[in-house]
Length: 218
Image: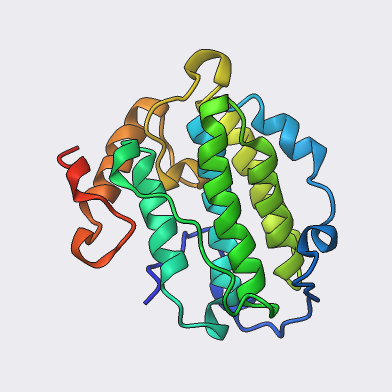
């Protein structure tokens, strides 16, 4: 079962709204449109781990929006594992999901979000990943019937990441917790390390195929 939603995601409001978005399995990226250049430019000023954190945060909006329409737990496990990787890279495996069942407006957007997480992870080695993260932002806006709450969160989260994890200071940056995307949580980059490590300690390594216990202890 999906774990608790981040406090800033209004799950009841978004999960029970009727699905209204279209989907094109043959050309989903054309349907999504170009990434928002303002988002891309903001992410270029954020630590590389912060870029992946933003991608994961956007993907959680997608998963919570569509959770009543699929019982597939793999995307949830993958997002958890990638949060763990922001503490230590070797804690998580990389996933290249197959395309089975991705031809509908539920599995299709989830598939694109998961693929873009993987693409973002790989691009970080080249000091990139902003475009991949910004694509997931487009997925979230597509699937949400009313994206105003998401957009408000997006802008606040980007400003917070820029303040806490500036790339010119950190490069890859320190361990980045889920709380880094929650404007209601007071933290610093230094205190965020303990939050991220506490999240990892709460994960079930025996029940998530994307987690690598060989990366323990943290």
